[in-house]
Length: 218
Length: 400
Image (cartoon, rainbow over all chains, first blue to last red; front, side, top):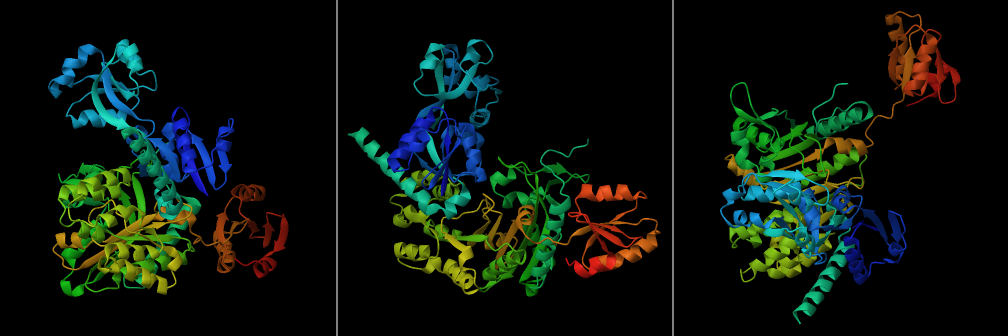
């Protein structure tokens, strides 16, 4: 029995389509209603908020799980990163009003004491620290784009997929932080003792990804 | 209400007793094989620890300056203290030296951990020259776990020298990147690093297969086929064969990609897992390189276990039942004289000095002890069924 923790929300669709392609049964998941645990065949599926997925894996309540690389980097809990699925691709960026652009294109000292609103305070801290810059970080839990518009912060650090929300709020990308995508990760103990089952899934995902990359190249 | 600093905890009651038993059995079982008890100082000078600790551990030290103006940290690791002690207190003729310990270590926790302090039990075997010592340590470890009735622990064994040898001619930045990706369990990064390894005269087939080389002893056969030679695999094979011959075949697994956080390891390494715990409960390995940093030529091996986790799953506690013993109208000395036969029979007792019989009886129910003893009347009530027995009946009938 392999326990898989799945993130609720918009990445669930990506995870399910990938699982289906790897041959993991997903029929009962689609009919689960409000159930948070679903058993199907040799699998148990747990549904959790994306931010909680790494904790389930790290504690061993799940053997493997699908988790965004943004969340892994933010929480930084010990787990085994198995494979980048290539799904749910987006970017983590610093964005702000166009007036801020000269400060980001000049010397780093121009960034000193900016106020940065973000859902990812640890990544923001590491990113600006790596530039040798001290900033004030505001930890918000949603509607991040609002912060610079209403004067709560100078800029934001957030993930961007299409950039439409930024554009709608008259914000520009000022700096790229990290690429983000959906990863398959495992509990350390499970990666030892259930490696055969886990590695079958990993290899299938790699094959699917390579096939898709090849299609794109063609 | 008073509280402890965040990240600290008190342990009391059953778990504390269990920890005490597990700790005592650990120290006594290792002392039977010549391991001397070692009580290291709780503090280390930063200047002595700094160079020997990896960056991610340095960043988590709990530091302060002593009243003597010396920058110090709370001990993060007992191995360092043991090696330093050995290098300065024993002559080469006295080696090998065997040490065992049971003490606390301190480190800023990494998420999702919250504890600043951990109670470790461990052993170190320092300064030997021939084969056998690594098996000694693993055998004693498994024997100890058996002794506290943990028979389902599994030791995962790897060998960091395999990778060190294969990457010998690779630029150190790249080899560190590869090793770090395995330590942090970041396989996508490992795959990316392998792409940079192309054309560097390294057995790429083995490197690509490495994350998959985990499981039972068949793995060593597969690895040998890819390497075309068993030289690098011999230490792991030897340990596995010895533990198998000692009857622990089902408790040993191989992971050739196993790498541990502390970078002073330089040979076979291992981690210990329990079915009930999602992460390793301990680990260790060979650290000859660390020994040489202290000017000692020879081999060294050690391990540590998390005592609290081990104690929480061990069946080491004495299942002795407790009796609440009411002194009644007896004097203290008479009460003790009448209590001794109960203790000698194997019961744990808790004295109740209150004068009110009903209060004492109520207390025994509140404490959920199985027996309430009236010393003056020489009567016993078995509380789960309210059956009253005479002293003689009880001591004759009940065994612990």
